[in-house]
Image (cartoon, rainbow, N blue to C red):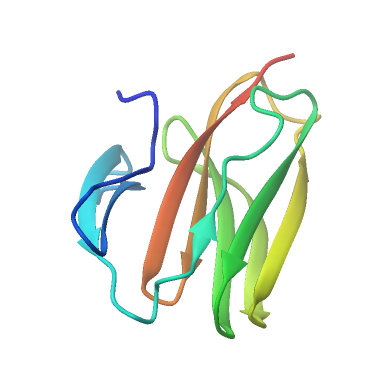
Length: 124
């Protein structure tokens, strides 16, 4: 497994994304970004590693349906932090993981056709 789930390639409008495949396992894909997804960012959560809470920051350039879901290492959804239509803006979501076990979690942002997944480490 790679240390960084999300990294930008030097090719214009291409980005490597970590995502879950049809078997629920983490997979890396390369997707082309079109003009509708430029400006969408899922920043690294902070602090990372964290205990018991972390801030997840993301930006969307236009209004649309947004979901922000946390998965465990097995690809199982553990919590859905956002699932709504949001206006273009910068958002900060605090995830209180005090009821979860220590370990690696993945935060997946989907806004329209854009999907990005970041790795988070909960240490108790």
